[in-house]
Amino acid sequence: MQIEFEMTDDILIANLDGELDHHTSTVVREEIDKTVEAFHSKHLIFNFTKVTFMDSSGIGVIMGRYNKISQLGGKLVITGCNEYIDRILDMAGIYTIAYRINTVAESIEKLESENTDEEAEGGDER
Amino acid sequence: MNGKIGKNELLNRMKLEFLNRSENESFARVAVAAFAAPLDPTVEELTEIKTAVSEAVSNAIIHAYEEGEDGMVTVECLIDGDRRVIITVSDSGIGIDDIERAREPLYTSRPGEERSGMGFTVMESFMDRLEVESAPGEGTKVTMIKNLDYVL
Image (cartoon, rainbow over all chains, first blue to last red; front, side, top):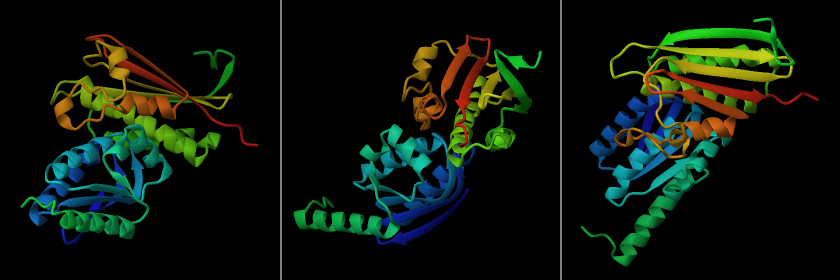
């Protein structure tokens, strides 16, 4: 499992590549947490386009990252899942805590529009 | 073994044994998929089988033995003339005291570890049949059956 990160403002994109199971989930978890912390990312996009296999270990990884990101008002987006990964995530109710969006570009757009809404409402409590 | 399982003719059978190391999860699912390949399953069926094997083997690796304890996990696979793939994943670990609760969606015995508790639910959903036999101190045996579609 390889992870390539991309940053745009306060959004971190984790491009996962390979197989996500219990064995590889440890590294994925650590790498994402480390990077979110280092770059003070608010929102997180999981890009599954290059994930060739995932079992229910992926659910735990996503739920754990949601718990961290949402504490600071961040949002989670899942993109690029094949139908099997999508089925597993849906089964666990992941789409009640994360957005399911078709492409990375649309995901960024969605998160940026939420940031704008927040500013307009004066909802930024800093 | 007389070469028969009920009325279905046994086509092939294999058995794998490996240590409870998490790197063996991918080995186990790939091996089962390769073994079932002569039945010419669809990509969908193969993915479902691989996912279910991964769940059962991960469960054994995570839960069967004490932390740091070496234990063996066994995967057996049979394919028969009725296009059935029968997979058994077993261990000789601590066992499960409440199987019904363990099978409930979202139940996990280790809530602090980011475990989803969806393993059995995924196995049930991706396979046609799931049976769990276990008792405290006597290990766990998970049997899963997949009926492959007939190619028209």
